[in-house]
Amino acid sequence: MGIYFNPSNDSFRKDRNYKIYVDKTELLNYTNEWLGTPRNCIAVSHARRFGKSHAAGMIDAYYSLGCDSTDIFAGTRIETYSDYKKYMNKYNVIHVDVSTFWDSYKDNLIEKIQEYIYKDFRREFGDKLNYEDSLSYNLMVIYKDTGIPFVIIVDEWDCVIRNSKEEELVHKYLQFLHSLFKSEESKSFLALAYITGILPIKKIKDESALNNFTEFTMIDSYPITRFFGFTEDEVKQLCEQFQLDMDNTKAWYNGYLINGLHMYNPNSVSMAIERHRFDSYWKNTSSFASINTFITMNYDGLKDDIMTMLSDGMVYVNTDTFQNDFVSISSKDEALTALIHLGYLGYNIDEKNAFVPNFEVKKAYQAALCTSGWSKVADSISRCDELLQATINGDSEKVAELIEKAHDAYTSILKYNDENSLSCVLSMAYFTAPAYYNVVREMPAGKGFADFVFIPRLNAGERPAMIIELKYNQSAYSAIRQIKEKCYHGVLKEYSGKVLLVGINYNMDGKNKKHHSCIIEQLV
Image 1: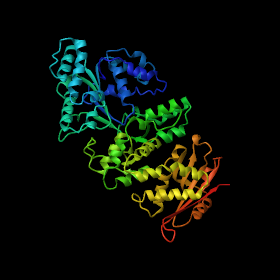
Image 2: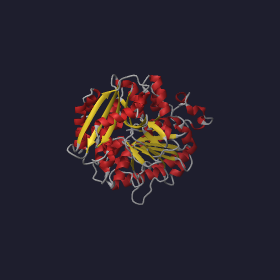
Image 3: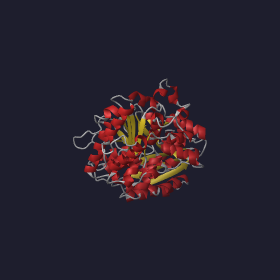
Image 4: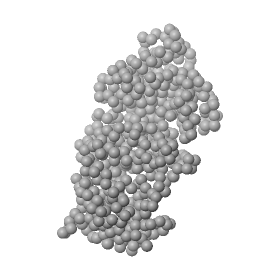
């Protein structure tokens, strides 16, 4: 049932044996510093597949006295620290995966967790313990008898918080965790607590059952940020090792900005290396319903903000009011904060801005929108590949027609009256272009800034580079003329392939009101 006492080190050994292994063992240097101190309770709440469980397997392999882990830590970074042997395989370890219990024992989850731990205790201690007593009391008894403290690891600790709407059950569960991590008994037997989840720690009313935990989240996880997810330098090394194009990898999987570090989802990078193909792997790890739940909430400005971020913009989000659950959401900021913790938005803590982190996550939104109430937006996105191909083919009439349809699809969300609106529409209209291009908005070029520059990546095949200039109440000709006069094409002087100049105009007034026109020329 995902619970064990004095476990083996098989989980971490499998990670070490995998060809795509990134050494995160220096995390243990931090946990060693916190071991047996008032700061010995650690809560890591990150999105799925960000390395939380990998760290849990590493932690129990390192501390558990039930195994000898010398060989699997040989050659790792933690081995270079002088006192790393001081703590290795010296502690009783209990490791619980709450999600496995939730699947089978929703009504008596706490009792079943304790029952399974006691089964292990009986094998180890026989009848020396009174199994009618609480778990925390028996842990204290064991510690006093053996002198060996406990490291307790709880994976998916927030499973109950995320899935239960029964306040009484949540209250009971938090009290159980309180007895393990904050009771008088725990002050004696607990050397280290490591709990993982998606949500930060939940507080009920005036309770603070777990306020002794130091929390590390998708918003702020300093100083251990680099141990959860792959850093950019680590991804570069992997791309060199496995001959994967870094430019494409960056476009697909980069973008989570945590404490100034660009972090990548390890699962997605590993899958891209394994398959040697770029795809949206991470969206398969969770339901689209979690996106739909929050983007369809009826809060003023929510749709505007979602559209801004899907079109590569940023929005201010106040994350402080979030109640750390999915049932108490009562504002736009709280809905967006939920998406940040789920990994569907990135967040810059210094500027308080949220954004869609990369193309992989964009693809998750694309799939989710097809099953939500955003039918017009989803329908417009479904035509993105057609628009891109029409542009490449030089079919200016088709391009104008599809952009006009896209603009119509967003009229209920965007202001339909300026060049900035058209720029947002263009980002959405070419929603799938980042699969092949680095798309740069307002790129410094020549004597000014090109509205859009599409720079082909290695997987673009014969697709040309493109410079797109937008005009409002002028003409597509004037857009093309501006590209040439201001030498915007100079930004692609190192590019030897075909270059297209694309001028697009939107008329708000006169007989051509709400009409879009387009001209496409090949640079010669």
